[in-house]
Image 1 (spheres, rainbow, N blue to C red):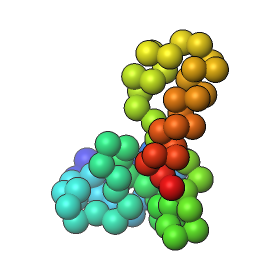
Image 2 (tube, helix red, strand yellow):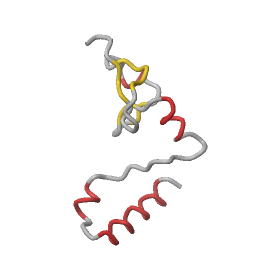
Image 3 (cartoon, helix red, strand yellow):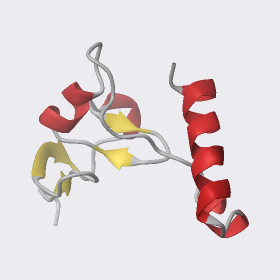
Image 4 (cartoon, one colour):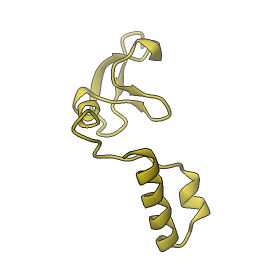
Length: 81
């Protein structure tokens, strides 16, 4: 278990990061999301992110798809552009 490695939270592949490595010393770790592999981490570089994380409560608070879509779009423009 001492040499167990993290899996990417987006694609599921094994990373080169040991589970015992403190988050302050990791490359590709995103607080609130988890560990990313090099490829997924690089997708979020200067070329722009291909994935956007929204708060989980949006799904619960906005059961109407139109409301949810509008809220997600607003959140995206306020936080990612």
